[in-house]
Length: 229
Image (cartoon, rainbow, N blue to C red; front, side, top):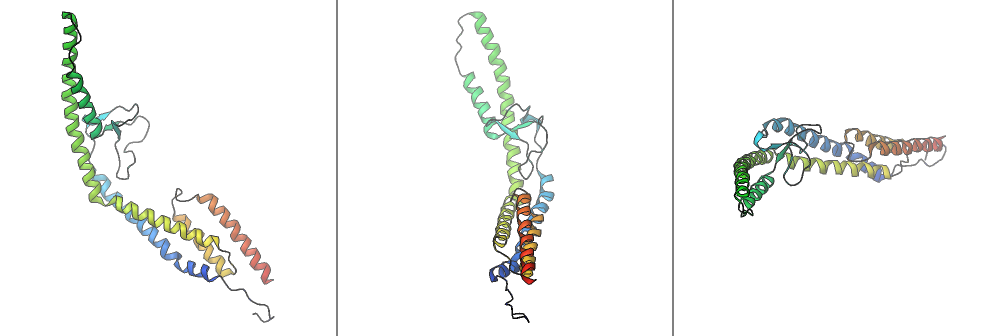
């Protein structure tokens, strides 16, 4: 109680306990974020360049290919006109289809028809040689890419960052679900809101959450001030 005999409100112990953990949880997220950035900066330049033998002009992608990728899985070159690169599966499919077509017997009876067929088969044999070369390059490129990705530790680091982001998101949400009873509680919640500045926008709807939490924080301040008056 204060000197006038009015009972002074005490802060919610659960809020205080969560507030004591905020810095540690936020630091864990920053550490994981910085580690991932360091790995990317060191290892992305070490990725192999896609050889011209497996590049093709993009129309649409099926299982034949995808983009030339960075370490984080994003497209190496931006823009809608960027080339695609064959996957190993896509290159194998091309070789298999051409071999199957070459193995088909001719349906032509006439000499002219047979001649056209042979010309077409000749073109396909040239194409098969090119496709078999592309398959070798695809296996080499994607194998080297996989080795660099594994050696970098990027995927494990990305997982640690995701876990740290989820933990911080859950921590902030838990704090903001509680009602601050004192200015100390308001400060705990203000610190939690401040940590959202280090969170990527896709982890939580930052702007909407901040606005909602800021309004709640303002209401708490007015309520606490009114009680003290």
